[in-house]
Image (cartoon, helix red, strand yellow):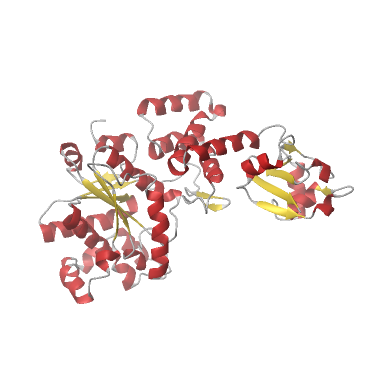
Length: 424
């Protein structure tokens, strides 16, 4: 790639940009920033594309800044939201910042000799503004008409709840961030999702007016799945970057389950693999989709970036066992090492004495089905596995002597949902 702009184009990460950005990126080092919302102690996979954008920027020799919005987080960005967010306290935000900083350090090099990454908190300057000073130094450069034209504001005005003055002011705060980063670090590029275009151009306009300098913006497409499911959402909920919220095994499985129609695009978005390698995986997906080679590479690469090679090895071992024919010969420790991260339920061992417990009752007990009737239908359809062996007879029973080491059962619903039963 000649420069970062072409890299973004090839990876389909470029949704829109300001005129002249390609030239600016080609002729010298550019300092760029992306903001991250501290509404939780962890980022989620929906934040991963912006994180990768900063990481690519640094690899091309430019200087990345991650703003963790301790100031704007107290207001809430209306972009892409149908209703106002619950406002966080300063203590909640400070706690969330710690987790986010740690996750960003997995992707950005803060010790690079020439272009180290930076993490800054916009509360450092926004919390010091007094209202009159902010209105004089920032607010006077924006007309209400200009702000009403922004899509994030317009959409909310058309909603039943409208938009509060608090969120209406968010655009001014983000614009001020751009000016502050320009003054402090020479930052001339802001990046973000396509829903941030209005906020970004507001900052560009403010820098032009108060610093007589041309700044730039670049926005990426909002990540979606071909099947129409919101990216990063599963039956179990949001997929987080924090291991305490989403285990490395579950994180690996999320990528492994990527649809064939999405996998090449995600390889471009979320890995550092080059064009030749991704083209080869694309060809394999077309000619032999049943091998799911591209999905395995995607899961391996992304999980390694976030959690490290050791967790990848554990996840791959778990995946191999997950669909093996017989796991009853494994030790309890081996099973717990593989499946310790999956949901589990304790079951009194005496319920399995004698004739044991009906498989339908067991499936309902651990809530792999909503009711006994649903559990019966699931078993009859062949969708239930006990220790990786399919059980299709609703009259079948499970006894203690079938338990792994006399202590564990691995239940599986279909190909994706696993549950561990621990006998007590």
